[in-house]
Image (cartoon, rainbow, N blue to C red; front, top):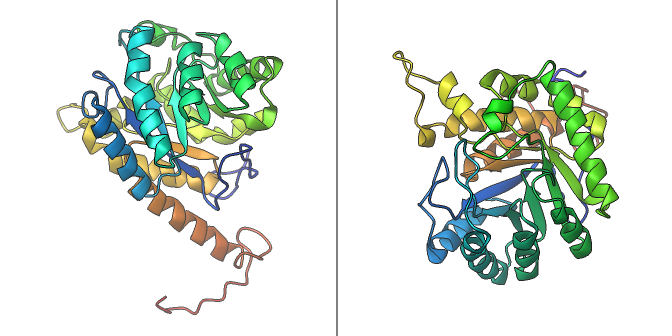
Length: 312
């Protein structure tokens, strides 16, 4: 396995989505009353649309619109509730030219969202919750993100048991990719997500993040979604052991975004876009210099043209 600070994953992209010289940045728009990080802040259509446009102005490449909280212990909304939350927001943002993903595990929501203007289905269950999602994605020729998942929010943490978390997550994701391809989703329209925080302990999360390169055996683009999650709060706990508050974990996640950018993942999913876009832009420029510029010979090769002390 390559050292994450020295090696780099092969460049992989999802057909039909933008190709950048850095990982794509997916901005989160939660239209929920109970999401762990921003539940209730953007419940109204106007507030959610305004937040989405703000994320785009910060540099986000696409927006992920979700109407169901997947925090541990969350209660699932009715299908009608989820539709009422996400469809008006997707419609309004699509009219403004935004590239959109719908964060859902339900075929009915996915189908309506795609018809309203979404281009991606981000399914945290990887098709396990509602296998009919895969048929919907295939029929719409949509892009699909399959996340590693072992159960709904009310039971998932009881399933955080692994002998080899990296190997098991990789193998279970392979099954979800095979299921999607078997349902007619083209392989070049699929990305995978290791599911940081879903049926994982903090230690499991860190092991996965330290060995993302192992997931490259799947041959698929990799999305990382670590933003504001509880393992960061635990890492940054105060001297009394109190976790860092949710909204004060942004800087830590930008550090993870930077490392993911160095490794060369396909995309990161974040709640605030500007700092992550800036960090990934710096990583891209740094790598260009290490390669001797855009036509260089490889990471670490000589040939950089800047002078020592030169102020660009």
